[in-house]
Image (cartoon, rainbow, N blue to C red):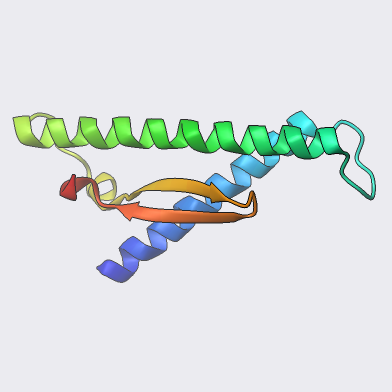
Length: 107
């Protein structure tokens, strides 16, 4: 079961990275070439930081809601929701992503 959770967390992180790459590239790179300009790099860095910050805010809010629902005996989550992991994502050196797995049941 832990292996499945790890695979879900990896798939989730890969999807996050792909979406962030697509959105930030489309927003920041207006004239693709062989090199990135300083303004391209700055735009990409800001875009990535904002995207990851937003992801973390949404993930924490979702985990809080799931916890409150579980405590109140309210909403019953489907099996796929129960096994879904939220990740807290941080940037370091603008190239390395660190994903910390969070099981919503442990919050």
